[in-house]
Length: 64
Length: 329
Ligand code: SF4
Ligand code: SF4
Image 1 (spheres, rainbow over the protein chains, first blue to last red):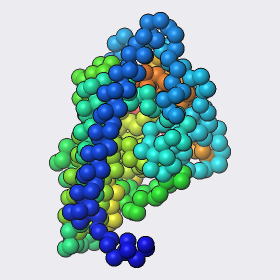
Image 2: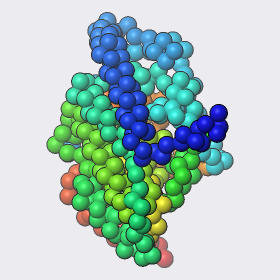
Image 3: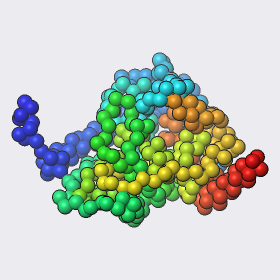
Image 4: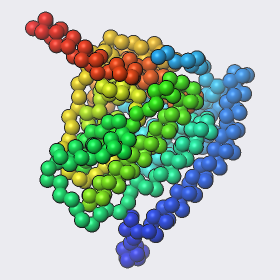
């Protein structure tokens, strides 16, 4: 396995490496945007509601 | 300036199981010198995001971001792919390190940085357990925020300007790193919360001094700027830390302390991992910081941040200190 990696090592500046980095980054950004759109709205609403009713919104489950 | 209608420090959220105190993680009261431990923001590349004690609040902070801020965050993320790149084969000699440092700083300013300085990579900028970046020198750069926008902290408008400045500073770091690689020397941009602590680097690079509010104060721009860095192997002459009289004022002034809604700013220096320095109570500041999209009241109310005031203030403080020292001799 090690020799396979050595044989096919691509420098960080290689176009294929850059392409794979871009694809991974696009995937990550889409994931973040999707989460923010879906979860962000829910969380913002919960926080606003909690501000009005003064019943604290529990954040523990967010880190799970 | 005075903050406009900051929300009171009562929180719409609560922990069922409160996390370990962030002050304990930060090493408040520890006499031994040691590396910093990540607790809140981190890309988690070293230890894994989930292991951070305050990860849940960090996530909440991200979800509470307004659309304008979030758009800036996405654009900054997209820029991340440019932090590294190819190094030119022909290497420009750098025997005159002072001339090279001046050239790099001039280029940083041409790219839009307000201030730039050079130092070496230091241990106090690293997190425990995270890989050490493989570079020797650091170009620390400060990008100035629009003061008119920042007068709106802690509202969304101020937060948007903060995120816009982080995007701009990451772009400047990217372009500066590319410029250095064009000279034939390896260089990498470190911006936007990469796992490197920017303030100790900026202090060592002479960008300013640490203020009571826990942020860096520059003679010209106060605390109204954001940091980024370029790490490189290009040999550069280093700058020395500066003394502009920040401690002289902070020991007498209480502006940030009084204006901080959750009373997080401590009025005396604290021992933090073997170094005595100004310290902000993490457990009080961060929940308010999260609720208000990044707060920022303390850095904007600071007299140093008022445009045009810093140089005269520094001169007066240093002159006063000289006079006092002279009288006591
Ligand atoms: S507001 Fe006053 S005490 Fe606070 S950092 Fe600025 S000068 Fe120091
Ligand atoms: S950022 Fe933190 S320390 Fe500064 S005013 Fe806001 S809550 Fe206080």
